[in-house]
View 1 (cartoon, rainbow, N blue to C red):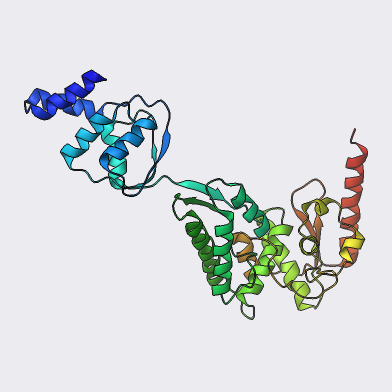
View 2: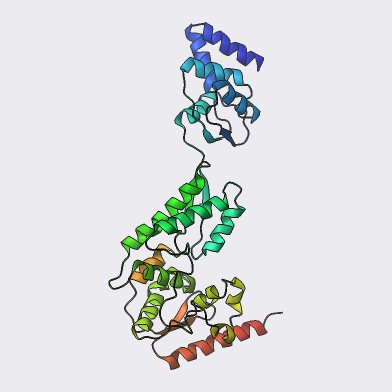
Length: 332
């Protein structure tokens, strides 16, 4: 390493063509960095301070060549959190700091996730502040003429974000995407919130995206006939969004009245019950044209069986429960 430092010093003092060639070899030679390193450069850090941090983090084997190179080039280095890949060169390290492009982390919201679960994921992420995130979401709700609660506001997707102002970046992008989609997918005679509420139910009911327009048609047909939606996910949400209820929903649960129980109440529930996908929102606004009024899970498949008459539906329900019983009987 002393040889490298002396070489750089000598090259800075000498102007010979051979020295210039050696100089370029030194600054573009891969550094002995075996694995990528993420490093934070604080705001206002001097060149010497930056070089010291990079040396301490193992990005640079020695800070002196880095300092000499950047002084010679009169480079302006920016603060932020950066990713330095393995075997990067000294010039490459400097280029990353000059460009100021921060390291991008990712945060994923799964389709059909409730706000409670989103907030839990934020709380489990060491890079995010759940209290700040929640406050920003509530500020967005208060500023919105559409939302009264956070449910359904945050669009499910994978988001890239940088460390600084991460919560602000995420909340702004997630809420903005939802509002954009509600502008894009509208239905005459329906409010944007009604579309989002129905989309959230479709998201929870659908076994796959292809059947979403069909499920939407069932709900639209039932609403037009003043029939109750009778959607199990709304009951579960009204009882505290207990995922364990999904496999053991009983008649007593269906009869327990809450504002979200679409077995005991007509119309849509008061708010969305999750964050729906774009496919679900599009399906809520543009249902398939059918006469279906019922659907039940298809035995052994991810989708559903649809019916126009109650007697037909009851036969499908019986087949479904026969299948479930046979599966349980065959379990060891």
